[in-house]
Length: 151
Image (tube, rainbow, N blue to C red; front, top):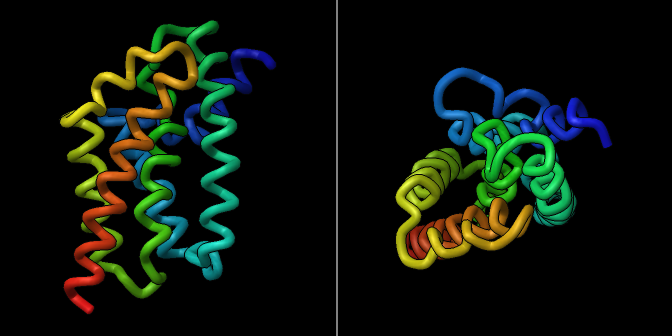
């Protein structure tokens, strides 16, 4: 696969190439799809997209490091995959929780607290993807708890 294709897919069709905070743009992609495309918020669709993006992210993450540098800024499939996790516990009408999910995910992804930073040292696509998947897992747990508390 050529470096052009790796960059196109790894940047989520250019979201990671936008100026300033490419990870934020990448995290926003699944939230917008969730809110704007009917049917995208169904659990089977979210799980299928999550599996596809995660598998592609591991493979393309390795390829991106071959063509570029370790965990390049433009590579945002890790943010897309991580943000998909908490969306799985929401319904398409949970606008406030979808926004809260976005903010919490960005907090965990940027701060790299509690073991998240250790995962980045794993080789290739695994190191790129797993830190964001753990940030997404933390977000999923908090959003699930908020949803349960709010009833």
